Image 1 (cartoon, rainbow, N blue to C red):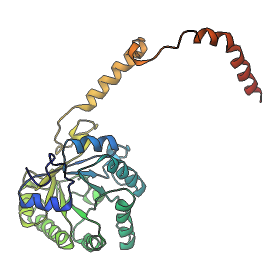
Image 2 (image 1 turned 60 degrees about the vertical axis):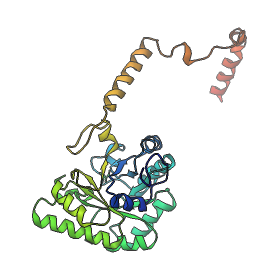
Image 3 (image 1 turned 30 degrees about the vertical axis):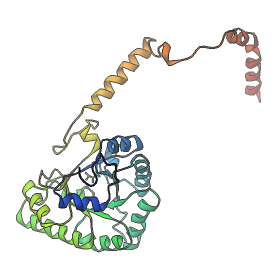
Image 4 (image 1 turned 180 degrees about the horizontal axis):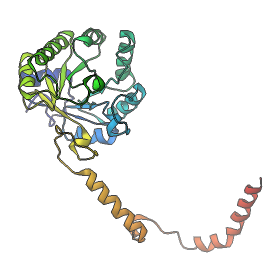
Length: 299
Ligand code: KIV
């Protein structure tokens, strides 16, 4: 049994991430956005829950992650933190919450720990954000990096494309990861990177990499809750699907609608009956309620 196996119930920390990398034990991460979702994935034994800014697309109905605000993220992070008892909760810093000034970035990162109960934050970018990462870590805020396809830079990339395909891009990715590691990041998400590049970078780093669309050579994997469970309208290629809950929900709600329309729901076991005599007394005194309602209307 490992140091922080689900069986021990020991809370996962950033030290667990390091220990798991050293022991070559894969790290399991999944997104969640609310308390029931967090309870379920925590009870399933994941190591870490990411409150991703993907909440914008999965839950809030936006076409990208760009409109997601600090207030949105704090709200969803606090809900997740209330549902997680063992997993390490990582909050995504939304677009423009860390790009304007270092002071604002630091203050915003701190809010996730102080106000929302997160254990760490995640931000996108490599060398450019390394000085910020250093300041956050010095202030006591654990930071997870995120490189490769960084969805907040969607319009710079011109789409959700695989990154670091060429050797120049692969070298830039490695340089970014080393800069993040030296700045004190405790882990790095590698998104949409060729598997061989992700494996090479993972071997170069002492901190774990968490892959999504980056192959099996990463030190851990992260998936989006809605993709994994078949709850989204669109399934990206890198989504690993384990259930068709969307279909199950549609079927269940359609059955409910049919049963309400045919008056078979609610059934006898779903309600109570009035005590004897209550309806007779109500009939006798209903005129009082009608008169009172008329009086209220006239006021
Ligand atoms: O927002 C998110 O869910 C993410 C993951 C895809 C890594 O950043």
